[in-house]
Image (tube, rainbow, N blue to C red):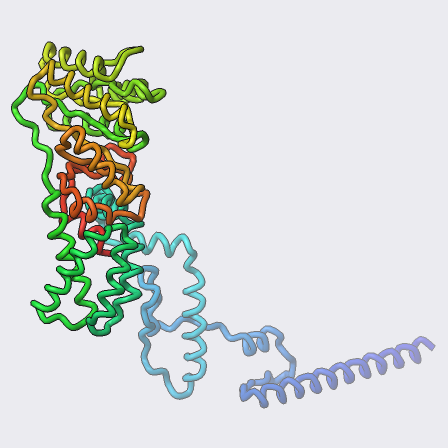
Length: 443
């Protein structure tokens, strides 16, 4: 009985081995078929036993870097790969290999390494101090020409807009001259100055044979310069000591502020200055002048109570005792229609002459440009009462009536000593006709 079971067991084992062999042959046949499709030759062992490592090696061949491929250096990230032509049998494999190597080596460079490579590749240079660029705008803004042009911007803009409306490339004719007359009158130049300028323009057009309307602007600019040129007469300090300057004008024209700016101007010329707080009527006028004196480190003579003539007299006596070069005398503001006040300012002049017979050496009327050609009435009244020697025009930056200088030149040609175009100390400068005309016309 045991023999029967043993025989059956042997038959069963043999049967299992046959099935196993058959299964291995079928697997080998499938693998062979797969490799045939992939054009991979396989040398099958004689014992028909499949070696797993053998098939893995065939499917995943070990690739070694050929020596003919030049490695990529870190300092040359954009360097091209130099290679020899591969054999015809391995062309496809080598192209794929070169692409993979190029990508792999490029990815190995980190951002820090690239940064270091870039830094070390730069030539060594010495540290140099930063070069400061010239501040052209700052220099320009500090110049008087720039401040004057800015101060006259309102007058210039109004004038240029009016001129642009009549000058458009046409011909010069009588109709154009009539339009020009309107422009000059609206610029506050007055009737007398307008008639004079129109005559001068016509003469220049005829003499030079001008036909284009755009040339009319140049002719007008030349005529205006010729009209206001006689007003250009700078203030000159003589050798008389002390040199007395008497300041007059209506309330609000800017007398006290102008005195403070003039004191600063004379100090820059190495002149010693003393101030007389002669405006005893306006509230806080004395305190305002004292503030300017402290700002400029200048002595101020003032009284709590008293009239303007007495303060000016005391100031002259102090100036002679202290050997001062210049006396700037402030006076109370008054309207030219107030006859009693005009008589009082005449008294101030006479009292100054008692202290110093040839004084005052200069009598300057301060005018507010905002009132335009109405300043002519003030000039006439003060000139008849005091015999003015000069004018100072203030607040030109706040008005579009800059043409009033032409009206003054034609009606009462008294020299303009200074013009003011702002609140700053540096915004008060001697009047120059060419600078004014350029700033008035040019954009």
